[in-house]
Each structure stands twice: as C-alpha cells, then as structure tokens.
Length: 152
Image (cartoon, rainbow, N blue to C red; front, top):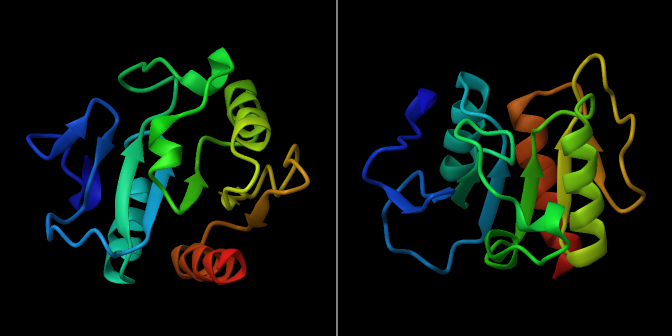
C-alpha cells in the first residue's frame, strides 16, 4: 500500500491491517475503508500519528475484490472491532451507498465519517453519517476525534 501502509506480512486478515504494530490495544480503532491509494495511505498515517490504531478494508470492489458481509445483510467483524469508520469508497459509486446503508442498518451506533469529494460533497449520505469535505486529512482526523467524543 502506498504512503506507509503495507499490505505485506502485516495483514491480520485478508482485509485488516495496522499501520503500526505497537500492540497497544487501548488506542481507539478506526476502520479505514477505501481502495489502495496514496490518499488512503496518507490518511492512515495521519490517523496513526493522531493516536488511533488503523485497520483497513479495500471495500467490496477491492483491489483485491473482497466479500462484504454488509452487502449480504450480515454484521461486519471489522466494523465491530472498530470505534469509528472512515468510508472513502466514494458517494458516486453504488457500492459505497450500499455499504453505507448496511452500516446504518446493521451498525447504527457506529460513527461513520465519509470524506466528501469535490464532485460528491455529501450526496447520498445517510442521516446518521458524518460528512466532511472536501477531503483534507486534518479535517477528517478532527472529525473522527469529534465523533468519538460524542460517542463516549
């Protein structure tokens, strides 16, 4: 993975990895959903630097394509192990809207942050979803912090 996230031997499962292997399970966990890219890597590094343990899922479209329990109407263990989700799959994609609907239906108390893109500034977001935009890494990190403060 670009930007410091490595899809190599650091994999915990097919779709989950940490940006650091400190063993510190007390840090809040943020699930970062999005395709492998420099932007995803940069965001993962920023969340890690801010004190979060970051896990990653490429989303059902991948790469590599991964079966998504949310699309099958089932709860997701990656979401259940997280304290917040940052969904960077993109509003313009039907699969993102389906994942968001699954998150809202199956994990209604989970804070979900969707960084808005210039073309999709919040379009299609479900009512309980927090949206930031345009994508600026410090803004997304602050929105995660605010969501977790509200949750506690």
